[in-house]
Image (tube, rainbow, N blue to C red; front, side):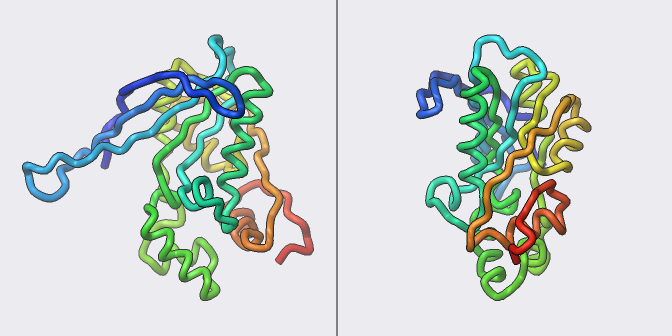
Length: 213
C-alpha cells in the first residue's frame, strides 16, 4: 500500500527533444518497513511537461521505468523506443505531458525482472515467467498516474499507448481518454516474442509481422 503522490520539486530540463519542465512527486509507503524507527524511503515519480498552455485533451504518455531498456539499451523490450517516441511526439506537438512512474518490471522490481529474464531464457514467456515467480503479470498502479495528471490540472488526454488496460485504469480514476494514439516499435530478434506475448496474452493493440515467431 502507498499514499497519494505529493508534489516535491520542479525545475527546467533541457533535452534533445526540447526544454521541458520537470516536476517530481514523492509517494510514501503507507506501512513502516522493518523496525518502527525506520523511515521507509519514498518512491519518486516525475512528470515532464512541454508547453505553458496545455489545451485539452492533452497529448500524454504514462510510462513505467525500465532501467535495463532505457539506461542499458537492452533489446529485450521496446521501452526505450517508446520513451523516446513519446518525447519526440510531444516536442513535435509543442505541448504535452509524460508521466514517468518508478514501477520497474511492470511493478515487480528490477531483481524480480532479472529473475524473470532467466526463466524466459529457458523458454517461458513474460506472463508465465512472472507467474512461476508467484507474481502478477502486471502489478502497475495507474491511480498514481491519474493523481499526478490531476495535480497538473489535466482532466482529458490523447493517450500514447498500445495497452487498453491503461486506458481503462486512467478512466476509472477520473482521467478522460478521448483518443488512444498507437505507440509501436518495430520488433527485433530479441524482443519479437515479448511483443507477441503483449499482443496475444495481454491484449495490447499491436500490428506485428505475420512471419514473426
